[in-house]
Length: 478
Image 1: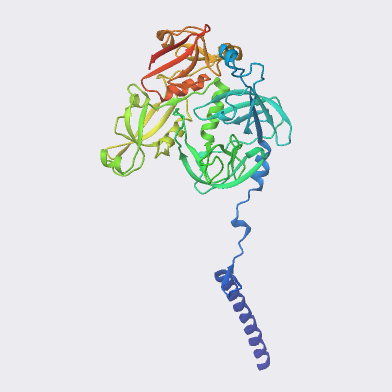
Image 2: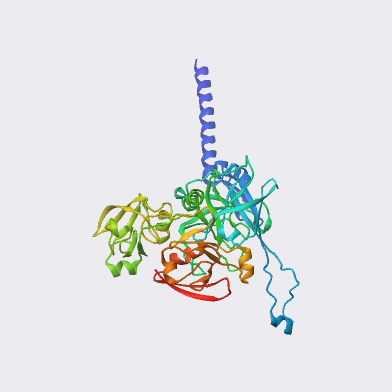
């Protein structure tokens, strides 16, 4: 009996000792890792991480890359007219064929029947557009519409059963979240790079002075020339942005890239398909971001929200009861803390849409309902007619034809095809006038004219040419 008891105690001791040893080993491995020693005797810890700690990009990459296309743009050279100076002094060569300019970028298929979203600057001024799919099939593409203000354009190819990506919600992106940039940098087809969301609602200065709606997603995914118009997708393979720009002193990637969020891009595409032009709504306010200086100047407590410096008379905000000096805190439940963030939220809506905002006044949050208006005031939707002309100030305008441009020796311009009641008639502009500059900014489309109007406050200086070659200037009050 004693021998049996001793044997049981011995077995239990061995089991407990083994369990203790295993526990110590696991704790030691977890806390201290595995050490190796370098040649100089310094211990270096080796750490083995579980695969679950790494994001898996394979599904998103393999799915989305099939919907990203290569966009090739050809701009035909313009033959310069032969003048008397060429005859006497030998300038130029009238018999020489003008050289075409070829550019390229990327695009993203968003429907199975061939609608493709890209950047406006990729296809702007194009005479021919061709699209090459991931499987190397090529198609001629036509421009359905574009919006220089957001730098978004929509193309269409005649094809069916195409792979496409679905729109994700860019508002739900979080700082530090992984994203993939897919495009064709330097004509390297279907290139995929990864990065994180570095910032949201980021703006950049408009170097050409034009009005822009910019509320970029900033990432550190490598983006280079040729990536423009390509896809920014999340790890689920959903489209959350259209790669648009880089911040660089050299023109190549240097750590920062920017994408138009899908909250803006999707609405632009829907407007182009539904109305032929973008329906742009405004609140009618002038904003300032709240920093220490603004807070001190106006006696504000805290720096949350956006300070409303001025409310346009009879504008959407004015009609809702919002005043100068109020602080805009939220739009439809989404907190805003910068002018680009406000622009991003407002750009989701059209004139006549009602939004709910929260205003901080005298230390209290007050809810308001605001019915958005169009830029020119009122709530009428813009429209493009069946002839391709767009309505502006009661008149019909469209891009000047190649024949007209060649006849007048112009590179670009916008022709007035019909003058109706409104500011153009009041200024004296007549049918056939080709607008070449507005406020000394060259224009080649109605959208570009609208872009200049968006940032102008008091008046416009319009320069153009009549069919007889006479150059005329007009002033238009806003």
